[in-house]
Length: 344
Image 1 (spheres, one colour):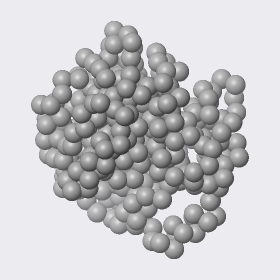
Image 2 (cartoon, one colour):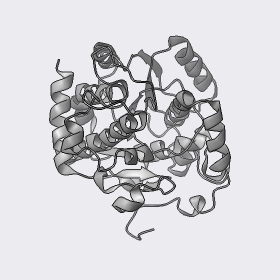
Image 3 (cartoon, one colour):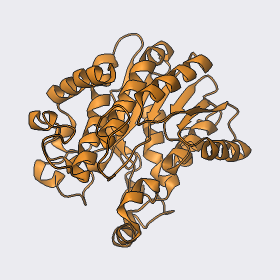
């Protein structure tokens, strides 16, 4: 571990013992930052807040006292989550639900408009929702499903909310956009190269689910890198973070089958996390005071992720980011392409 990396929880991650071990939970991050009911002047929006680590992210963020909005495609599940969190949360803020289908840009636009009708403030946007290893398919707008849901929907949502993020940013707390990415960004060797851009949606080559996931997770990182480049300075900065949450048993894995998931849980048991622990890095990126005034980065295990060589990046046993996670030319090209695609 480089001495220059921000890594306050490095010791807790040295000897993992499986879910529920000494590694921090999302709520511990809030407590360690002394933020219980200290964010009563802030608003947070979380996509995919009614399942998986989204629930624990919402629970921790609500404990800050902030107004919390979650998006969900399932109103019954979202209402159950809202009821359960409000019954136990020390936070006094609102908890609102925005119905949103991320495979439809029209639904994203409607959801953003609904949020803006209910709040004129947004301090943290957490783009948490996503799909993984799905069968080949297309969104309602004709994009490859994984890239459309994981990147383009979140790109459009962020674009629509950036003016509010900018207006809400202050010297006391710079607004943040947090994209939940993955070690899976290394499934796309070399990142978003010109060759990948030329066949982003597998129209020329056979569909491969892990390549699709990999390029969408690279896009999540490059997206916030470009936010940092474009919005990270000035009087009202917005900083961009991305992260690997860790291995957690959630519905994200449902397309892999029970046998595959069970094998992963056994072979990687010590490194597996509970959902409460899986949400910790997201929350750390969203709230940690150590990041205030600093440019956002790609993180894992509640720390700034270490750089890997091209060779080591192909070893999925290792944590860290691939060299292609920071690529200005790809960041700029992705931003320009995404602007065109969501403008249809």
